[in-house]
Amino acid sequence: MELIPRVDPILQRIRLHDDLATVEAARCPGCGAAIRVDFWPGGRYFQVRCEGRILHRSVLQKIDEPPPWWTAWMFKPVESIITRFADEPHPGL
Ligand SMILES: [Zn+2]
Picture 1 (tube, protein in one colour):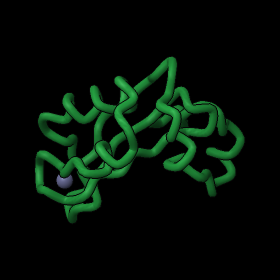
Picture 2 (tube, helix red, strand yellow; picture 1 turned 30 degrees about the vertical axis):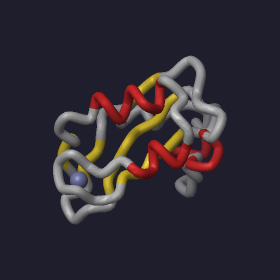
Picture 3 (cartoon, protein in one colour; picture 1 turned 90 degrees about the horizontal axis):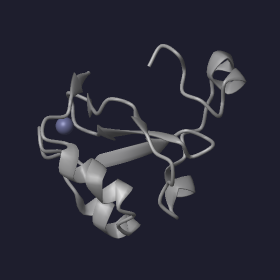
Picture 4 (cartoon, protein in one colour; picture 1 turned 180 degrees about the vertical axis):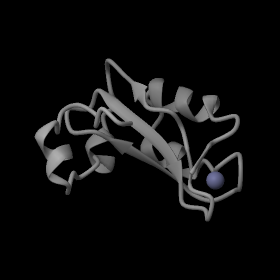
């Protein structure tokens, strides 16, 4: 995985609570692939990633007020260690 270059405008759209369709319409600035947003259960942390072959991602973001649609992109923990800390990101991220 590599960091998404020039991702700030996408992060800003999420922080300004742009509607879901607008955020989904954004393409990865690094490779042009579709982007996804993973919100952790609790809605206080998120990460933007792309679906391209390089798997660009942003660094983990903390947000005080998630956009109204955040549960649509809620990350579903499947690993026990992540489930245990479900409201907070895994410490290794
Ligand atoms: Zn990409």
